[in-house]
Image 1 (tube, helix red, strand yellow):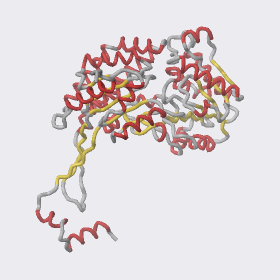
Image 2 (cartoon, one colour; image 1 turned 90 degrees about the vertical axis):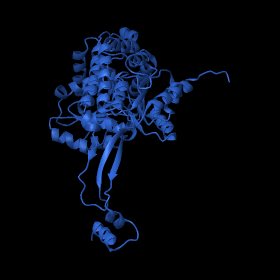
Image 3 (spheres, one colour; image 1 turned 90 degrees about the horizontal axis):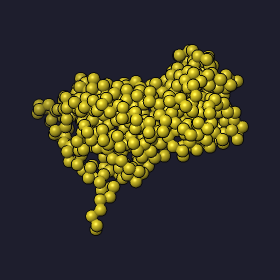
Image 4 (cartoon, rainbow, N blue to C red; image 1 turned 120 degrees about the horizontal axis):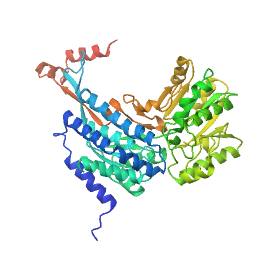
Length: 474
């Protein structure tokens, strides 16, 4: 034994410190939790410039405006919502109990679970670490965060920011590569929250299951965008384009493919490219058009496009300087019309500024196309007849959905955000998040009347049989 402390050992010591500091008897009050949330919001406001800078450095070119909104404003909005409603959510839920076979007073206490682990991704490296952490704090827990190794500057910033405002046994941030992530997922957390790919999410769930740790998985999938027969390309394409090319498509709920009535693929492609040209004067140089996170991911996206084109698909691209694109590691907004059904572009989540457009013959065919595939994280329907759009939503399933908008539903604090099937399970944001990180503990206060105790215990008599038969009914 040389006394060397491994990464796993260091993680375990941090976990043990948090577990040792946690106490059900002295769980933080609502006032104390609000103070922590206010402290966190104050840190974010003070560090806002450094947050924008760190994320920009990790990406190489990340829209500062998108960072301000998606990473900072959205996070502050979630924290404010938690503070506003925390007292009501944390209060015991009492029930007016009708006559029952079990008499007494009943209520549910919402208690902290203990130590919560948060594994966050690279695409929104600040928001997707801090919002679940803030929600866990609101529920009275202690939190450990493992940010993505693909955004190392943001990971270091998170570590330093939380260290400035919180004790390590209250909130701690651990950095490192895949080996640290693996060791992190093996810790016996009281709840583990993961955002990322379905492939890694499955491995995280397997490790957590060994400790019987409850898990929230926020995954991805291929989120469809259905353009109804009465949708108009020039009217309904703007918010499709917004959702698709925000953060250069590196968003888990971005439209992943578009279904349009047969014969309208070119019309929608033209309308979308028109919107893109209005958004970005030159994608290669426009500071509001974000780069691809890594060269490896850029190469993957390029290969997806090439395979689809080789299979007969038609490409439509926003005009851009190719040399400048390469230098900035950007990929021009690209539309792929009628790609082969079996190409990787139509099988894998794209996670980039590439949108396949597939034509359908009827709304029923479009619905069948969606329901024959894995359940997506989001589903979007566009059209003039809102009731018809909502009817499509009712015939499908997805983690969330929107009519005549894309991505925006994630920014509504009170709407639960989560997946279904292979796009994940569990949900957070607002009250759903508070419940996710809380233990709903049921309590029965039984009457002290002696005759009630005799009624339900042996030896069983006529009164017991009468009560049982009355409950069962005819």
